[in-house]
Length: 193
Image (cartoon, rainbow, N blue to C red):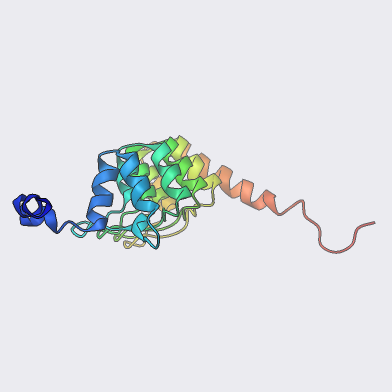
């Protein structure tokens, strides 16, 4: 009887990979299926990529603005720095969406803030294009470089200078520069009296 039920299913349904099923469960917010899949001995599903797009579970949950799932996947070993086939990382998705809570969750997961996409654009450059000063501030505070250039040779600082009304953005960059300069100023080297 089980054989006839299996034979009645379409061939494609019989051949779904574990990775496909895992990503499907993440998309459907099916926590029980996700936990069951991750608890299987020897599994490597946490960073499974969609075969067509290269997206991982971390991309999916960031795009749907789900900080709880970001934290959950990170706790299970999900890599927040994996780029899809276009070079887009979850941090770049969060930046493009203006999703500050997601950026904070990704930062807690240890994301690299200066990872560029395939055009060399960093999350900071994307935030500057959006004129999102709150996001710019968070990225700079967490080590984003305003001087890293994209494939056209321009940096976040360059784009801020080119912007009409870019004063607030330039102020954020200047403040971050001052904070970085002052960070090491208080330290002394050698013995003290």
